[in-house]
Image (cartoon, rainbow, N blue to C red; front, top):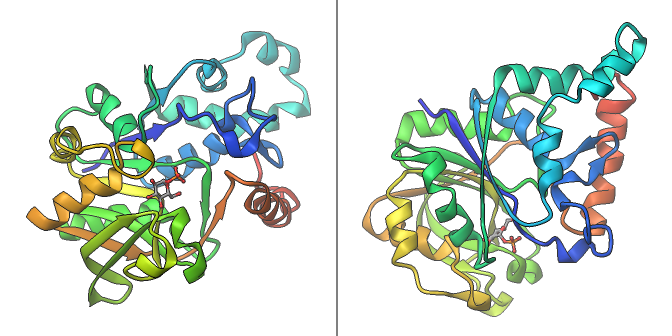
Length: 279
Ligand code: G1P
């Protein structure tokens, strides 16, 4: 059973400056909810109740968000505004939150390794909150992945097909198709130029990792951009054992940049806010 979900959230959010100068990018609202809350809700839907967040300097708003504000509670008690807090109260009731700080930004692999003391020796999920994932047709993306983990018992990464000209924004995989929408990974490259990409199957910000990944990250030299890349550690795992890439059902919005953020905002406004499902 997977119970833990790690949120690397120490990054600077430079693609969204100046909005992210003094505010964590994970707190950017999509309509009325911060990005990270969508991620935690997706985790809870998948049965992951132990939320571990890797934060950094200037990220204290994250901890305050996942806590009770007594002044606010007192202020709106008995009014119809209480409905706005139903969702966040559910998260506080049903999840635990623990935090650790990444003091130096040395890449996503390094951020995940920083979370090791919160995870221990068990399989866990990773959510990159700026990838907002939704599935109006059924299970959320993490729920789909947890079900696959129960079947295959190995690391699972979520993938989607991207424009071949955009491979340099993603970790890109290739492998053999083992079932509908499932690949056994044979190759994996972090942000390859289109001419070097093994395919157009891009990793998005949802992973289920087995705990041997931590030792593999430790053995991983800095790669693309001089950073410790999770993609490089996963490639080692794929060589030694098994990594599965899963073309998930649903939609993903890249909220780290303006275009995806606006698309997500319009989508959530139409499908959640207007329909009263936004709290
Ligand atoms: C990270 C990963 C990359 C992955 C992407 C998904 O990159 O390094 O492999 O495809 O997340 O969003 P970042 O977007 O943090 O640069």
